[in-house]
Length: 466
Image (cartoon, rainbow, N blue to C red; front, side, top):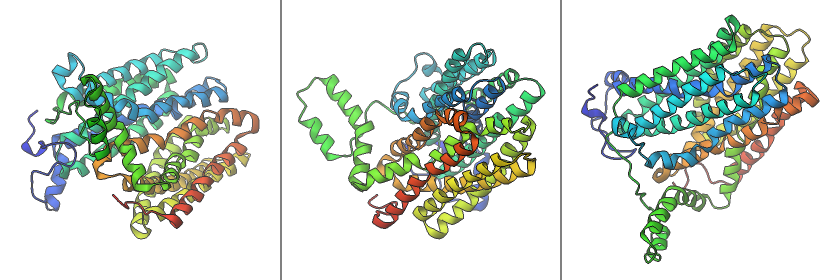
């Protein structure tokens, strides 16, 4: 495939665009560019495995009779996604032997990760959770680990593959592909399981990984190659290394790498926000905790109160996707109208409040599809609004000198507490019931409301001192 010169970039993210500003028609044409279209398929490949080791897997384990406590512990597989920032520096600088020479650094890592995804999903499909639960956990870990590597590689490819004026189109097609993949891995898996079996569903999902593999082979490698050197932007780091110029070369190289890739982004954030940085980090870590914790037990809950897999797929996945996208659009309007921080506070109130709808549903003696649709409408609208505001807030916190690293750290931190607490969700359900569990998930959201209120009073506002 031959790509035109518009895709060439002179450096890392933020390289100057190669063309003048486009009119509306030209802007729409950018969505037909090979790499922009390909980004949609890579987004599909990135979104496919997430639910297969999270809520979809919870449903399979629930139908197999696995205890709620064990299902909750299985949600810890998702913790792998919270440590992508640990893997990223190595993937960014290591070229795979053989495969890297053929495909280039970025695509080689993508293809290796996709091979791991396919192998892990096929292994899960061939495992009976009633007799080999530990094997299922190991194979799930393989899928989660490979998925994390794929996400890091795709993000790096997206940033380096095109000029800055195409990044918006790349992000749009990526998100569209990601959401479609989640619908397939969610609703699609439920439909297949209802018609055949859960192992069959996972075999089909493994087959769909081929979409990403073909895309990797068709798309070219970015011209930009990231080396082992890390630019040091902080004077204290330069001075620190200068005072150690007598140290062996290997020590100076390693120290430069660690300081530039890890220490400086942290230092910059703490220097800009001071003691308020601790409050901000607490908000980042806790903002989505109530939503993530609830999601662990949502599918087992639907099954336990009598909904069929087809009803769950239709209402929570297909209809739910529409409501999430609607909520996201409303969240964007809210951010524009009242600002990032206030919009984040509104989302922080709505998200845990929507969890109380699950308490109401758990009290119903004969809940129908209408009741489920009402709960999903409220929850997904609230979460869509909250996620939009929160992503805008995270973006406002980054320094343009360290955007990628700081955003990766924030995005990893925002899932870590929720995934950890979610591991105990089954234990709470088995001892206190679903009603108390859902009420507890709402309480988890209260500290965030207080912390955001503190930030509104003491500042600084998002984007200050950038």
